[in-house]
Image 1: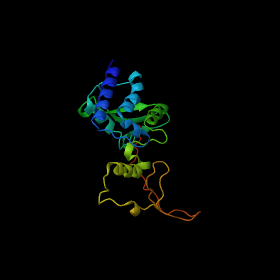
Image 2 (image 1 turned 135 degrees about the vertical axis):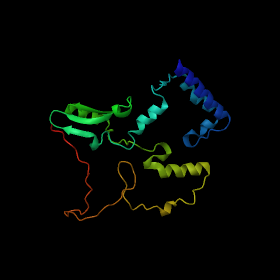
Image 3 (image 1 turned 90 degrees about the horizontal axis):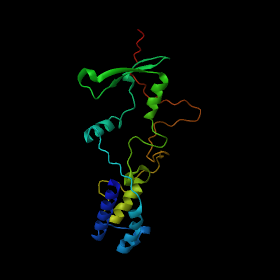
Image 4 (image 1 turned 30 degrees about the vertical axis):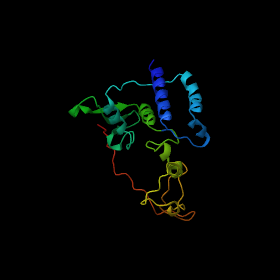
Length: 209
């Protein structure tokens, strides 16, 4: 089975780099630097079934990258693609990437409920971000993780980066991602804010013919 082959090769390579001294352990895992302790730690993994999903994409890696790139900085559907909307349904333009030339641009009409259902498929659950850093670069603990990594690797902070004392901690942080929030305006309670977000200039054309 492919999963067992992957399991064996993965563990063999892991043991090889451990014997070569290329693995470092810290904190509660410092004892794993010992070869016997490391072997005992890996022993249960040899008996566990690993799940490996390695199905080849139909169009190749380029097709997968092209598909994902359409969702990184865009919403599910732009207002400019909406043609008509009434109580019976929604008409919009869409691209058929299997076709070339003028045949790629097509028009589809869906019932209102079905259109909303398909749109909500592209809405991420609460707490998720469409594009996010992960691991050492996770927003909430990025500064602490990088500082600890530099300390463990004995790497000094680059001169062009501000020190911890120069960072402005007076700005509030976002409760969701931990990033620094930008204050647009401060106004008294009960007062009307002067700032107004710019409205979209994209008009929706409704075909009533």
